[in-house]
Length: 496
Ligand SMILES: Cc1cc2nc3c(=O)[nH]c(=O)nc-3n(C[C@H](O)[C@H](O)[C@H](O)COP(=O)(O)OP(=O)(O)OC[C@H]3O[C@@H](n4cnc5c(N)ncnc54)[C@H](O)[C@@H]3O)c2cc1C
Image (cartoon, helix red, strand yellow):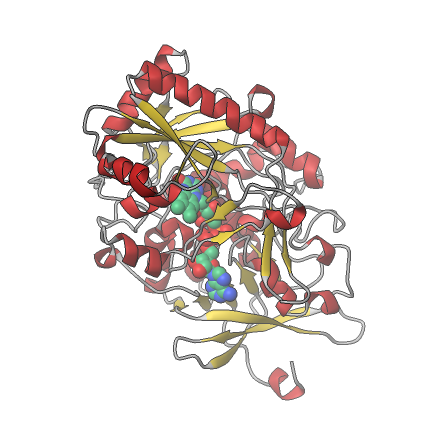
C-alpha cells in the first residue's frame, strides 16, 4: 500500500473472497450484525431459474474446469480429478447436499495433526463445534432425507444381505425436492446451500456481491515494529478492469485449491519474513480420494432423476475398520460426466463400441460412491519455471488397499442385489481440504483457532483449507460451522 492509499477511508468492514461453504455463513453473520460486507466471487450469480438439466452449460457456468493432480511428476501412475464450483454459492451450488457431522475420531485426528486446543486449553472436540453445527442445520433446513431412488433401494438390498445396510443421510434439502438434480444447480430451491441460505439473505440485509470478479492480490501494510496487517484486495471485475477495495478484515474463502496461490501472489512469504507458518501454505493437502462402482441391472432405474446421494454406509469409515465410507446412489446425473468417469479393467477411460453399448444402457446403472479416509500427504505448489499450478496427491499402497476392499464389497453387494455386471470409475475428489491448516502451533498450521493468519493481522481463512486433517467424508457442514465460529469472533471485535 502507498502513503496516499492509507489516507483513503476503508470501503467495507469486511471483504469475503469466495461465496461457498466457508464464505457464505461468515458473510451473512457479519452483515446481520450491521457490518458493511462485500463478497467477491470469481463465478457468476445464477439463481433457481437458471438451473436446468443442460449438462454442458451447467458444467461451463457453475463448475471450475476440473483440475488434475500431476502425480506422474512424483513417480506415481494414478491421477485424481479435482472438482469444485465456480459460481455464487461455490461448490454448495453443485454439491449433492449430504450434511455430515464429523465423528469423534476425526477430532482426535485433528488434535494429532496440529495439536489444536480450544480456548480452555483442552483438545478441540465435539463440544466446541456442536452449537455451530446446530445453527447451520437450522439455517440450511437440514433433515433426514428418506426419499430413496430405485438404484439405492436395489443397492441396499445387496448390502443388507451382507450385513451392512445403508441408512438415510441428513441433507440440506427441504420437502420441495422433486429429485430433478443437484450437480447442475437445484431448479426448485429445495437444496439449501449457501446461495439460498446465506448469500441471498445477506444481500437482502445489505451485503454487496461482486460476482464474475477474481481477487488477484490481498494487500498488506506494515509499519516498523508492528505486525503486518491486511489492508484490502485487488481484483479483476467482469469488464476485465483492475480494481482495488480497502478493508482491515479480509476473509479468504476461495477453497483449498486456490488459497495458496492467492496468498503467494500477495507476497505472504516476504510479508511474513518467510515465517514457519508461511512455509505450511499449500502443504497437508487431503482429498478423500473417491471412486464409483457402478452396477448394471435389467430393470430401468432412471437414476439420473434423483437426489444423487440419499444413503450412507459408515461401518468401515474408521481407519482401523477399513477407512472408507460409502454413499449411494450415483450415476453422475448427466450422461457426459458418466461417459467420462467409466473405466476398463486396466483403469483406462472407456471408448469405442464398449463405451457406446454402456451409454445406451445408462438408465440401467446405479453407483456407489466410495470415499476413502486418506492422509494429508498431498501438496499444492507452483512450478518455479512455468509458474503453473500443480497438485500432488499420492494414492499410496494403503489407499489402494482401502479402495480395493471397498470395490470388492460393492461388487459383492451388487451381485447379491441382482446386478448383471459392474464397472469402475476414475479417481476423483470433490472434498479438497488442508493447505492452510488451523492450529495454535505456527510450525504446523497457517491460521489460529479464530481462523486468523499467524502472520498477518486481519487476514482470516475460513474454508476447506483450514481443516487440520481430512474428515471421513462430506466436509461442508464442518466448514460452515467453522465459518460461523470465526464470525462470532469477528463480531466481537470493534469496527474498523
Ligand atoms: C460435485 C460436488 C459434490 C459435493 N457434495 C458434497 C456433499 O454432498 N456434502 C458435503 O458436505 N460436501 C460436498 N461437496 C464438498 C463441498 O461442497 C465443499 O467441501 C465445500 O463447498 C468447500 O467449501 P469452500 O468454502 O472451501 O469452497 P467452495 O465452496 O468451493 O467455495 C470457494 C469459492 O471461491 C471462489 N473463488 C476461488 N478463487 C477466487 C478468487 N481468486 N476470487 C474470488 N473468488 C474466488 C470460487 O469460485 C468458489 O465459488 C461436494 C463438492 C462438489 C464439487
